[in-house]
Image (tube, rainbow over all chains, first blue to last red; front, top):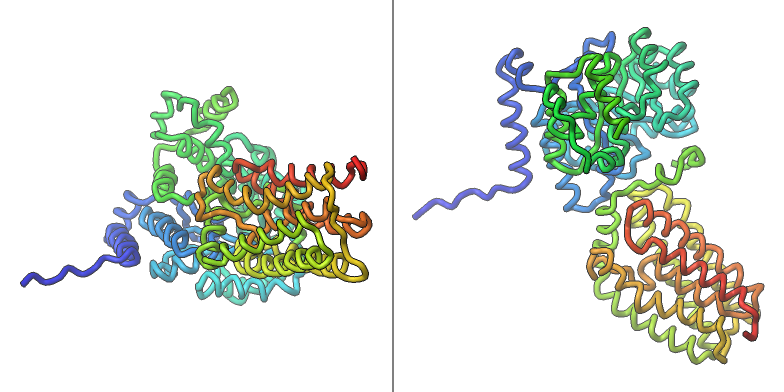
Length: 310
Length: 224
């Protein structure tokens, strides 16, 4: 009598994908370097991060819907399988933190993730409790990075985060902005505060940061996380019916998403970009952009000019 | 999340959910409540009959049903389903409770509301809004591709409840009691229309049209 085959649940399948990826990545550093995404050091920290991470704004805000939680878990499984590490969230993002925590637990990937979260309250006194609540949602022993969301109550929170860093309760700290808002204030903070990272909006059409903030980040040794790489899909939709230029093949960009991501991460100040997605194939496509060849300065100008002309 | 400087955000920043999550809110809500939809539709139909044949006790009953529905929707939909994916709903829930309170106070105490018995433009528009909320609004789920499993049913979800309340308040007398009842449903419809527009959903104009119709009815000359 034939022995019944064990059932293959989605959870086991996802864990299997992750384990297979881990085995493939582990044997030798050289092999891992060759097969994984390009990395860049968060300046002055000795921590190298894959140059494409994973955002969670809107995409992971799915409540307790079991179907969508499973879909998000599949996205994170594919992200880790492709060599991704940094996942970014915020208490502002609805249930996104809980979704990440759900997936990390099911994928047994707490050790693998570089957990970047934010503090988002105008009251510095509420900061520690909010951070602890966020940590519980993620299910991680501590955050790798804590950022002050949109500079809200930044002076008070900065003291909290510095104390936490000194106590080993968080590895790195930063500030965030988006949509090009409050760059003057971001610049002032970058000049005076001991930041590891600044998160801001940067992509092939939103390039204001190139003027002052990105050069300043290099000068001060501050990492930069680029949010809204696709303008929350708007940019991809705008370009969808336009042809990629034939010379995109020179940088091995086969889609607009890869074209845009390669532009972003090739800037010398950018540590990584954090596109968000609900689709496994898009995660793979995004991570595949973090590979050589990346555009040089001349190619970057050509890319920006091309998109501007469309 | 109480001190989160919400005023620094733009409308598109406050759109926190994707179209698929928004649609799933209604699907899961309907699954959890089935077969309460049938009861809600029966009670809604009874309320429509009472609006068509107005009696003082009937008007008080309709107002009481609406007040209960505002509380129920605040608890079952906004608090249990929507707030976990949209922190802004935490600010809306007290307004729904306030609307229920206003219905009880303005609709039932010290004379309450009167509904017109003779047909007029105002009454036609008011009855029309209520009938639309009861009978047609659930079917818009078909047009948006959600299917009936994602239908928005009166008494269980906010949009048809707000539109039905607009219908009642649009035709009720006296005006000084009716006008305050328009405010919260009107504001909800405005935010709902904005949400649907930002989500790229068809029919985003429907809640906005409901507000316009209610205002037109309310401002219509009395005996026209």
